[in-house]
Image (cartoon, rainbow, N blue to C red; front, side, top):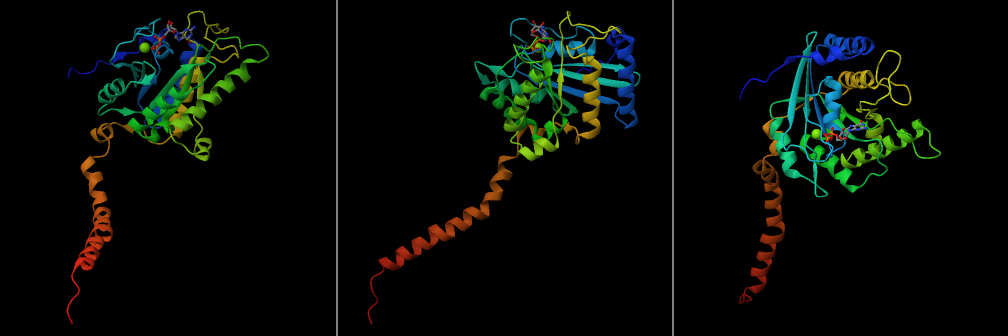
Length: 297
Ligand code: GDP
Ligand code: MG
């Protein structure tokens, strides 16, 4: 395999100075904690804004954005280095096809990740959607089954299309917090987390607006309707999760293939033997005994 190309992160130079300064701070803090590489995995349904979010973070148009939900079938890793820090972002195709989780797409993603460490999972959906359903739970479940529950300790929920006017009667904060809560509930269900566990390690939610028409503040930073400059906010949250969450998820063959079926079988052997003894052997013995002609005195 050809060596993966790590380019200078030129996109960061396009960011306004205020954003650049903040990013320099956040990444600098990580470097102090001996973290000089971050690998971010971006997952979610098709058309929710995964690729656009990758482009926004990198500050360049590095992956294809599609108005129609058609995406490629392969994940793409983009690597950039800046001030001694390397950022890898892995954009993935949507996980849903024909109303179901596409296991083949997931399989391809898992193989792509072999021997890589996932430091952060961005689980992307849209802020301007009003419902969560069983399919959302299935997607989270598929991710959990692939990489283990621990991945959510390194997870963030990212909600795109965040520059919106909420429907009548709701203010922006209430609307976004309702949608966040609904999605976090889905994550808890899909990841089979107990309520207490979920509350203890609350997964952060970040709002994102990828549109070129995103409003800006006086420093020329893209802002949400609540005034938050969202790119620095997202990067700061990512850095916090890396500092506080458990370890990154190293994807090895065992993780990809699941537990060895032979090993799993071995655990069952004593139980099968015990079952045979108590139910089969004993029963046969009694049956033979009952069947024997009475002995002559
Ligand atoms: P993906 O399939 O999840 O990778 O989604 P894409 O990034 O390809 O985006 C799908 C469509 O949504 C494209 O037309 C994007 O321009 C649009 N889009 C993505 N994110 C946003 C956003 O935050 N705001 C708005 N207004 N449009 C977005
Ligand atoms: Mg895409």
